[in-house]
Image (tube, rainbow, N blue to C red; front, side, top):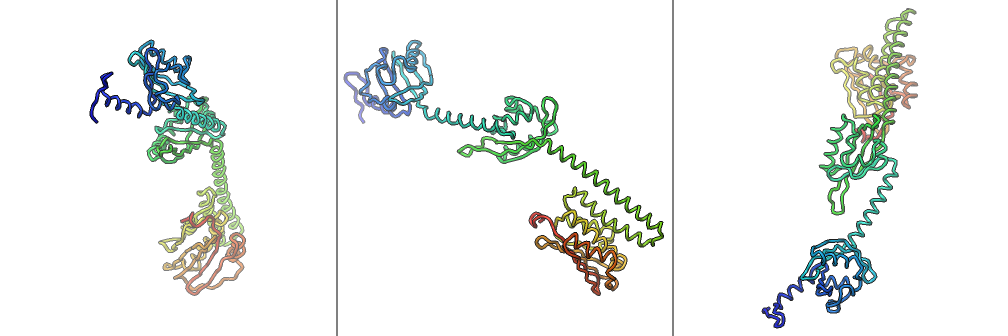
Length: 451
């Protein structure tokens, strides 16, 4: 395009056209007025806001344009800039053509008059109001929630704490914001909790931690804390949202329960020892043979062995391998008893019954069976099928065995006693090569939990 000059004004036409294109291409609105408040220029964004074509309003008084009366906040801003000859910014609300708009406005001196540029932020402010309303409702709901709750920023500092959290820690919510909550944290739990929080932030993952907090009056509360990551719509990590359960009374009850169980276990062990002593003394006083006394003691020991294993497990059940190992430990010299089987959990009742049965088998093996000879061996195996574990006691390398009369303690134990405790009696096979005993017992829990 060739450069031509307007003969009347001497202004380069090409430069004017480029300036016009630039001004009209701006996303922001623009208008200018002279010292008499007459409109000297405006761009396409201004035309859209005012609902007037540029040619129709050029030369008109600014106050005569719809939506810009002389008493409007827009007019007051323009007057201040004209009087002070200094730029000024403001956020203004205008009602133009029946629509309310919010504008971010900058007015500045321009060639004896005033120039104004603005950005329509109506949608931005509406979104912020919706956000603020949403957050207010969230805070209201969170404050009514009985469980402690909070929000943290990406740097880990708290930006919101609900009333339940403040009540639990005995401090105003505002004092807990940022890193203020750590003032209530017990010093012994500080390092562990901060390490867990740092890892959760670094990996943007969920976490949990149980910590003690001290209220201003010195009372200690125990909170089980849980938190999970939160992200904005773009996927950027914004921090964590957390909750906490006050478990102080629960932990106190658990401690009392453990103390009671430990005391009960101690008394039961003492009672078993006392019973064993009384039985031995009574049998001796009545001239009963020493082997009878030894047999009774061994059976009491079998009962005590199962009790010891259950005590270590707080009577929540036992691992079958532990019952078999502890019950046969006193007889397993040089590995003469081989134990093989998967992990299986059994109930306390089953554990006691099996302890007595295995102790009886081991005692008889030492006296009459495979373990009465140096080369004798016992294979004790078990496997699980559904809700049942099948144990097999198989002796080899011992003297020939024969079926004893079914009138003694062993006969009753493997018959009626096991049937009552485990649901069915044991199967005893007196094979030429050695005794075989099969016992079926109920188990606890699914197999996958015991893998």
